[in-house]
Each structure stands twice: as structure tokens, then as C-alpha cells.
Length: 219
Image (tube, rainbow, N blue to C red; front, side, top):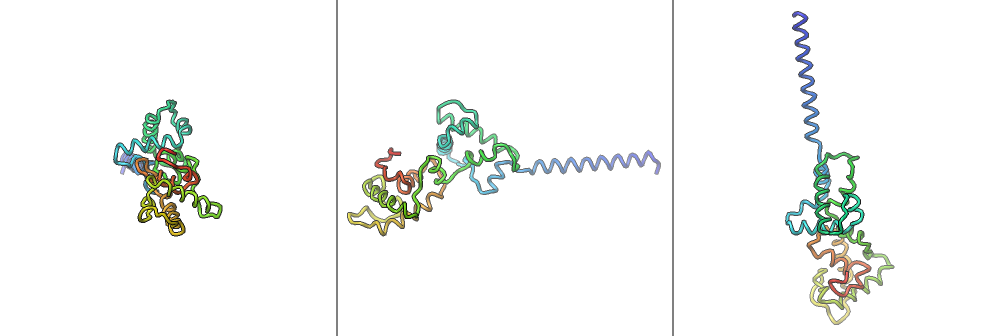
């Protein structure tokens, strides 16, 4: 084989190697997960996964209102409208979750904070509401909230927290409170969905402020 032919073969080999390397890089790039895929794989639920458009709109508005000043600074929104703010947050999140994921991805933590569904507990915390606990110092607060719910029977039927029947004239607090506390434990860990009543019910039954609730608009 003459030297020209050898050089030609080497050239072909080099081209093949370069092609393989390019294909490998291209394959890697195509298979690099987006932030959306990473979050979904790690059991986050994106706000954008809500199918009902009316519910979705409410959710974005509620998310915007939950940390309005921080979100306005983050996304560069300057208006006062919650509706427009929710739309602006939606657009910001949609653009960010399409980006490639990496541990150091810019705004990753903010996406986790404002672009995914959160638990009722998180929403209460953002609103500076304290959830009642099993500690002895909260015992009297549970009692007072329970008595307040009896006074607002139309707002707070027993069925709301899984209790049977109507509010009795007698005292069933000893039997009722353990069930109410169990209900509260479960519901604070459920997803906060703006179109549902779960947050309001948990607020009324399970927080320190519940004792002050007299009507649906008291919050």
C-alpha cells in the first residue's frame, strides 16, 4: 500500500472517529434532562400539570400572592394585579422548566419554590399561620378552636373533618378531638389546590387563628 493510500485511510479513520464523537455528544445533549423532567422524576408536581384551565389560572394567582414581593423581584414584575402577576409567573416558570437541568442550574431553587404544587402546610407557613400541634401548650388552643367550630355549625359541619352526625348539645369533645387532630395531620400534608376548600377548612380547624373565625370571610 503506497503512502498516499495509507494517508487516505487514516483520514477516513479520523473522520469516522470525529463523526462518532459528535454523535456521542449529540446523543448526550439530547438525553440531558430538562428541569421539568428532573422535577417530575423526583416526585414534584408542576403547577402546569393541572388540566382544568380555570383551576390552573387560580393556582398561578394563588402562588403569586403567596410570596408576592419576592416573586415580583425574581421575575421583574412591577404591576399590582394578582391576575397579571399569576400570568407573568406562569410564563417565567414555563421558560425555566424547559432549560437543561444541572445541580447548579440558575434559579433551580426558585423553580422548586414557585413552579410546583406545595402542601397545605407550606401555604399556611407562607401566610404566617401556626398549625396546632400535640404539645401540651397547644392543648387549650385545641379546646378553644373546637368550641368555636361548634358555634359556627353552618360554616363548620362535623362532616368537614370526618365526624358523624350534627353538633350535639352535650359534650363530645373527648371523643371528637383525637379524630380532628388525626384529620389535621393528614390534611396539612395534602396538596394546596386553590380551587378546593381544604386550605380554608384546615385553617379553621387546625391553626391558632381558627379560634377567631366566625364566617367564611374572616380570614
